[in-house]
Image (cartoon, rainbow, N blue to C red; front, side):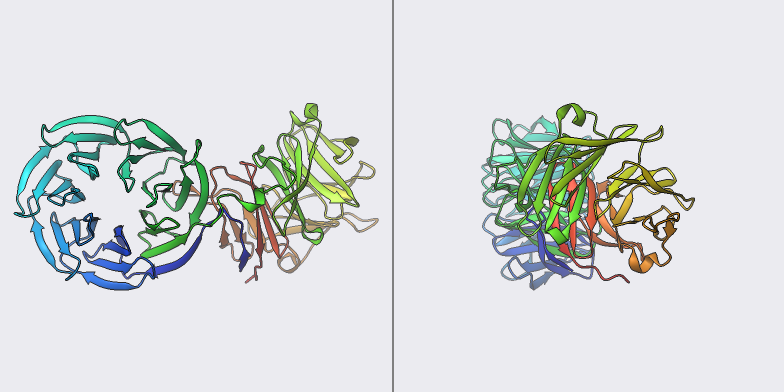
Length: 551
């Protein structure tokens, strides 16, 4: 059970499950319309999520929906090649527009409600008279037109996507000019801006000058749709499984939230209220999200003015008994965080001449001293970071170190190298034990506890050893399923085109907690049975109180 999360990870406060795959959605005021694969259109209350009506008329799936500006009518396009105009008071079909010979991919209605535009797989754009139902313009294209819009403030112009490019059409002259490269477009509510999805980047542009006013950088080439909030301050962007919420009011766009919850692709977005976006997916769910009141992550708030923007985190150390977490950064900075408030209590800077060669790092606060350990390719250096003194240097065999950790009691360093784990005494700088294993190649040390250490091989199960038995070699722990860590941190798992970091149960091998997918990958994480801390390449720290019952 997640008992508390930091801001920056948005919450889904309501989920509506339907009996059919969802293809599209749109909204107007307090009403959401959802188009289904069966051809039905479900009408939901945007505040409560309650279903208020079902519109039936299409014989195949509904591909596109748009409300009229006054909200009294709804226009739908379907794979049955038809366009329908619906009366929202009665729920009946006012008119059916026929003429396309293939799927209708997108529909739009003019600001004065006199004309409907439709883009189809038959490579035409059709303009329909709402009163007569007749098609008065057919514009032939080389490729099908997708994601079509009337300019909100100019009914004589259309903008649409065709063949991975954004085009603008002057209806009077039928002149078509290129605007930008892109896969998807969306307009702000006042029509003064539009956003273009193009792989790694979402560009927000001025509708008239086409000047780029903001660039939103995605973590993968997966931006599939976007939308503006009603107050035009926020842009929501969906990739295959993740939704990113951006504040575009400042000089530099700021990532507010990351929403994770859908399990299948083809996400559609709407923004019925400034703080509550809505999304749908082929997983048959409509999800209502809440943007937190704060645009800053409290784990980045530092009462002592230590900058929250820092170098990538090399390791995160959880000391829940002391109420702290320690992040070690690639620039040699060590930060101590209060896990109850999320604030940075103190920070230390390791000498720059050593930090420049930093490969990996670990730090622990023990007996009033902050001991920081890092290594280059052939040595481990142990520093008293609080005093800035080098305590000792431990030379290691030729070859890189895969991972290392300071033990919980601060007495040892556990070094993982290929199929070996070696324990070194911090007080003497000498090796006190070594084990070899052949049951899979572990990527990292999972946990330490005094003289004990655990790893998760690529094969099934957990492996652990006790290095603290005097006069004998390290002893392998027998019942690791009970006394070992029950959760394994999964740094970055690629699902489709998205990076979805998470926490995996070591017994069932199931992901029991999906972490927020930031714009930088997760670099490290630790869990002690109650608290979970995660460090990111962006320098951010996530602190959760997380209780997991193993199965």
